[in-house]
Structure formats: C-alpha cells, structure tokens
Amino acid sequence: MFANLGQKDMLLDIEREIAYTRHEIGRDAFAPRVMAAMAAVPREQFVPEAGRHLAFANGPLAIGHGQTISQPYIVALMTDLLAPRPQDSILEIGTGSGYQAAVLAQLARQVYSVEIIAALATAAGQRLERLGYANVSVRHADGYHGWPEHAPYDGIIVTAAAPQVPPPLVEQLKPGARLVIPVGLSGSVQELQVVEKHADGAIATRNILLVAFVPLTRAPTGSGQG
Image 1: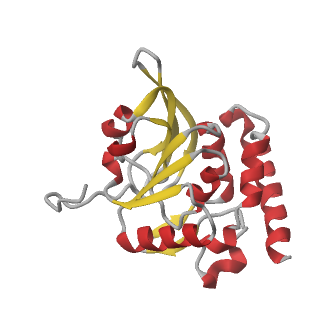
Image 2: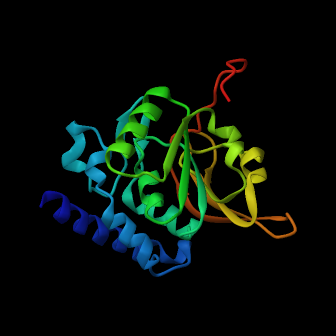
C-alpha cells in the first residue's frame, strides 16, 4: 500500500514539475506510456533500505560510492526526450541502482546498461534479475566507450555529466536516433542536451534544461577496462 500511495504522489509531483518547466522543455505533458512506466517500476526497490521512506520524493537520493538515483521528474523527462519504442534497442551509460534501466525496460525491446563501478554493476544486475527485468543486460566497463558489440542503438541515455558528448556514443547511434545527455563540468550547472543523428550522419543538438548530475567517471589510463 505504501508503494502505491508513494508512486501516486510521485506522479503528481512529476506533473507539477512539467507545468513549472513547460516553457523550457517544450511540452505540457509526458507520453502516457512513459508515465505508465514510471508508475509500474517499484522505485523503493532501487534505493538503499535506510532511504526507502524517501524513495518517492521528487529529489535525488544517494546510493553509495558517491553516486545517486536521479529525481523521478528527471528520469521521466530524459525517458520522454529519448522516446523509446517497443522494438528499440537502447544503451544506457551509468546503471547506478538500475532504476532508469528498469523504466526503459518497460518501453523498449532491449536495454544495455554500462556501469564503471563494479559493486554497483553487480548489485544492479542482481536486482534487475530478481525483479524480473529479463530484457536488461548490465556490463561493468567505462561508459565513455559505450557498448560497441551491440551497436548501433535506437537511442542512448547518459545518467552522468560529461564535459562534452563522447564521440564513441555518437558513433554507436543509429541514423535518426537520439542521445540524451547532461553536458557540463562537475560541480557546476550542466545542460541537458538532446543530440540527434540525421539520416545523412549530420548531428543536431538541442539544449533542454539546466540540471545537476554527478560526473561521468572514467577508468584510469592504462587500466585496460573496456
């Protein structure tokens, strides 16, 4: 019962945020299937037990290792901007607790998720499997390089801020597909961007909203992590 009430309040908070930011994001509502996915995923299962009473609050929560689970509104916004379709193959960079991957799994055929912190990758993979998200694959690797074995992707989402858009991710994007990513320096406000690859390979970028994400962590040079 708690989860149902919490998720109902969470959806109302998302709708309020949409109304408040509608001029920046260029929409008055998110797609019904995106909101249905947000309602279907048990967010409380993706936060540490000590913070579960705050699971549905519209703010980020610490998940350990200096990482966070994004606020529900931002998860919904990035998912709506990506606009995944049922037949799509999606790449996520920054698995974290697995929450964004679980939302995407409701909307796409397959989700490939890359996490650089081994403990988070292992825990997220086990959590997603336990909860029945059979169409999510998690890999421990440096997300800057994407996951080239399964490219090209119908969409790519990055849940950590990069100083600039990683070229390997653009390369792994299908023509006509989108990359949603926060771009900016750590410790400063970043721009949430939508990068679209046109059929001729040309790239168009739109700035959507000012955001604050943890930085995209890179593997140490010479570590051999791929």
